[in-house]
Image (tube, rainbow, N blue to C red; front, side, top):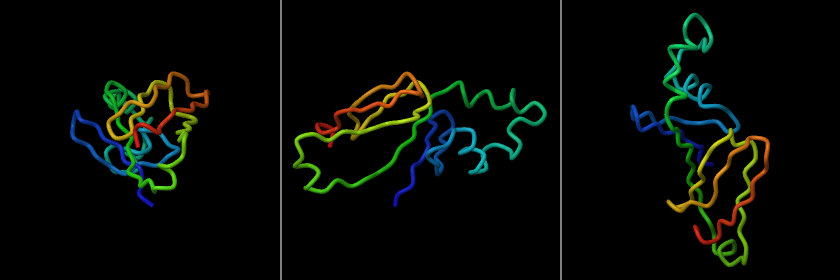
Length: 110
């Protein structure tokens, strides 16, 4: 299985990611933030994390059987608030609420 990755263009951080999870725990688990996220002034020191866009990505293979389906949906649950979801550089959907289950037509992007 190919693990998800996170990417931050501001400082060229590319690391392994865990889904479900958060950007803060992924950065901590990969050594980019200290173990104690909320100790001392770390809430101030780590504000840079929330001030930029992060990309979670994953590679996957699609077989001919799936490509021959009339409909291929991507279902997203628990996406933390605002996001744009791309497959093969094509926008397939946007999210605005973590507590909503989203279903997007992904067929054209495969």
